[in-house]
Length: 434
Picture 1 (cartoon, rainbow, N blue to C red):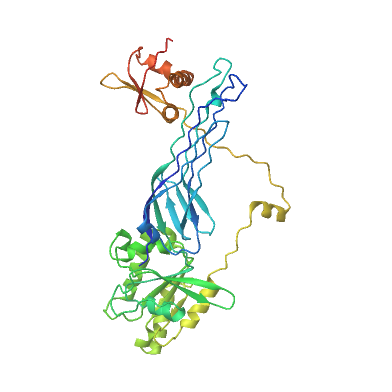
Picture 2: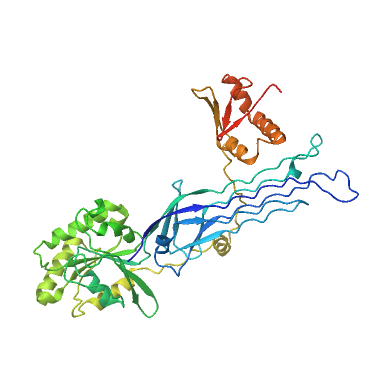
C-alpha cells in the first residue's frame, strides 16, 4: 500500500539555562560572576532522501523531539548545543508547517527546518554592571518550537497514465515497462499509483499508472480523487481510452469526463501536453481502429497525437514508447547564480540578507476580576527567561518592562500599585513608583 499522507508532531529541543556562579579561588577575594551560557536546543530538520519511496515510516511514529541543550556552568563554561534531529522524507514530499508555510522537497539533499530549537539563557556574567557587580540571577533557556505539520507525497513521474477505470492503463504500463501492476477485468483493479521505468539507450522515463477516475473525482467521488495530486508533477499525460467500451458507454463522453475532472481539480493539468491512446485495438478490425483514430485526431486537434494500441498483441506500444521519449524534454539542472554569472561575464552585485524583526507590540487589557493582562511575544518571552521569585531577577524584569513601555501602558489603563498583573500566565508584583 502506498502511504502518501502523514501528519506528525515536531518539537525543537529546549535551550539550556544560564548558570549563576561566582569565581572562587584561593587568594582571589570577590572573584566576580563567572556563570556560563546555556546552549541552543536542537532543531527538527526534514531531509529529502532518494532512498525512500513513501511516507510509511510515519505511520509507526508520529512524534519527533530534538535533544535539548546543555546548561551553562561555572568558570564561564557554556552548555553544549543540542544536535539537530534529521527526519528523512522521500522526494516529492510537500510539507505544510503549522503556520501554513509550504515547502516542496523534490531534490535529494534539500532541507527544511520544521521546528527550531530554543535559545539558550545567559549566565550571570552578562548582567554584571558597575552598579550591580554581583548579580545573583541568570536567564533560563527557551522552549523549542512545536506543532503538527502535514506531509503529502506527490510522485515524481515524467508521464502519467489517466483514464476511466478498466481503460487498460495497467496493461499498457506492464507492456511498456517492467512494472507488474495488478491487472483484472473489473473496475478499480488499481487501488494505488504504480510506477514503471521506460528504458532507452540514453535516458529513462518514470511512468505512473494513476487509479481510474470517474465523474466527480475532483469533488471526492470514487477512488481516483485521492491520487489526483500525483498527476500534478508529471510533464505529460497519456489519456488511455477504450476504442469500444464493453459497458456500451460513449467513448466521446468518457473522454470529456476525464478532461473535465482534471480541469476542475487544477487548471494547470488542463494545460499539460497530452497523448491520446486508443486501447484494446485487438477487440475490433484493424480498419475500424484506424478509422476511429482519424476521427479522434480531428476531434482533439493536431496538438494531441493519437495512437492505437493493444497491450495483448503489443501493437502500437513501441510507437508510443518512442513518442514519449521524444516528447518529454530532458531537464537540465539549473546552474547556480554564481556559475551562471561567471559564464555570462557578469559580476554579481553586493547583496545583504535581512531578517524580519521580532514583533515588538503588546496589548494591555483589564479582566472582569480587575486583573491586568499583558500579552505579546516579547513580554511573554521575557517572563519565560527569568524566575520572578528571585528579587534581583524580578527587579531586572520590571526594569525591562519599563523600557519596553509596559508600565506606562498599564498606568494609562488605570493601573495602581498593588493591582494584579498577569504576563504569560505569571502574576507579577509591579510598583512603577519605586
